[in-house]
Length: 107
Image (cartoon, rainbow, N blue to C red; front, side):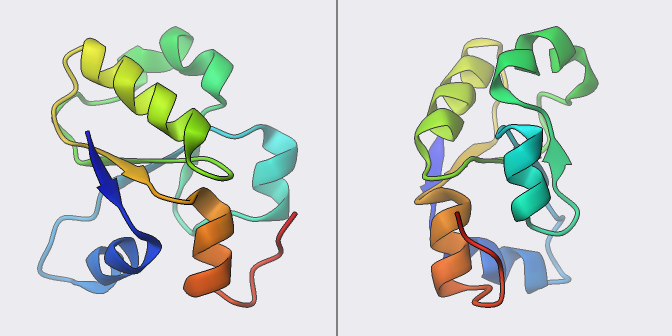
């Protein structure tokens, strides 16, 4: 697992020459409804194992939560299940909102 800053993720998402990553948001539905990155997939942390078969182990995956702690735990869990191209969004959606998408709601 690697750590990715909001700025690095933004560069990746805007670079049309790179394959876009799966943006796996592991927060709760109510959090996702307040703020999320476009095209992210919601899979609350407590449901990841239940739905792990819906994910591709070789797809570049950026795991996102509010501040980066839950996402780090999920990324480690996925790594334990042989996922190979994992990134934790450092600072989570909160850091994204404060440094990339200043119009995004925060909570």
